[in-house]
Each structure stands twice: as C-alpha cells, then as structure tokens.
Image 1 (tube, rainbow, N blue to C red):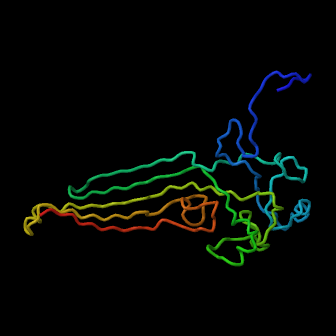
Image 2: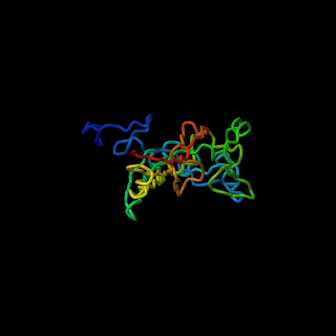
Image 3: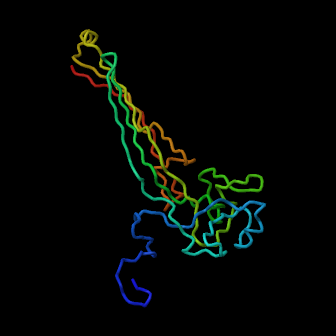
Length: 236
C-alpha cells in the first residue's frame, strides 16, 4: 500500500482473481457477468452494438463501455447452500397406530444452467433429454435464449436457484392387538408401510430433481427413484 508519494505505508493480501477468491467473500461465491434477460425484437439496435441480435442473452454492462471485462462482473450468489435443515417427527394415535415423516431442505444456492443458452450446436441436434423452452419472436421469454444463440464467448450464463424442500419419507405402522393374535398363536405382530422420496418443492427450478443437478455435467440427468415398502414383523 503506497501513499501519494509512493512510499510503502502498509501491506495487505490481494484478491486471487484468477481463482475467483476474494478477501471477505466465501470461496463458494459466484463472481460472474450478470445476465439481465434476453435481447428482444425492439432492442435490435442496442444488441447490435454488442455484436448480438434479438434472442441472444443480455449481459449487464456495468461501465457502459460496450465491452465486457472483469469490471462488469459482480457477486451473484453462492454455489453451496446457505443453510440446511431437517425435520423429523414420530407420533402415535388410536393406541395401535404410529406414523412418522422426514423433511429436509437445502436453501440459498445457485448453479449455471448452460442449457438455457441454447448455443451448443452439436448438443441441440443430437440430444433431447428434456423439453426446454427457447426464445422466439412469438415467445419473447427473458429466461431462455434463442436456438444457436451467441454470447460472444465471454462465459456469461443463466444462473438458477436450486433451493428445495424435500418430503423424504412417510411411514405408517400398525400394532395388531394382542387379543386378535392369541387366536392365531402369535405373541406380537406389526405391519408397516413406507414411501421413500415422496416429492420436493423447488420454487425457482422447473425441471427434474434439483438435488441431482450437476452443472459440470448438465446432460447427465438423474433422479432418486421413489420406493414403496410394506413390512410384516411378528413373534411366535
């Protein structure tokens, strides 16, 4: 740190811009260009100033110099959840019945959704793993670019919030009354039924399981299966 005369008056650690690590920020912070929508038909002239056209992603030009560099980047969120919580409850009712459920949530994280850019020609013509909307003059969305869009290779991307709440498990049990068991020669019998991976709620994610989404392999679609289990446990 230098004063106005060039004399050293102190020292401080520098940001590691190459690795996108910044003093005072989580190493899982997202530092990138902010996509503010998609260029529309009535913005063709403005888009042309950036070498783009309607249907291409619109990127925030912070210094309004018609050129994108690190000065235009900003912190957009985090790649890891800001908090996680779990809620499990068990209760008994009508003497012989029992029930339990498990809820858990990952909240406050984002990931780049490359597919929304629609610019990978090979991928567009060879695969169709999910129905993803795209911009047209008749469908002027701000969430998806046109097919074969052009982002000028600067690395801007649509980011999607992957926050979710999952109802992971519901179980119901019934303890058969002893007076009924005596008639068939059993000391104890319990019946149970459970459902695993019941469902999830993700307010800003439109597609498959957000917990299974991997931005490094966006085409590797995977999701946990729902499992139903019926059990009988008895003692002679």
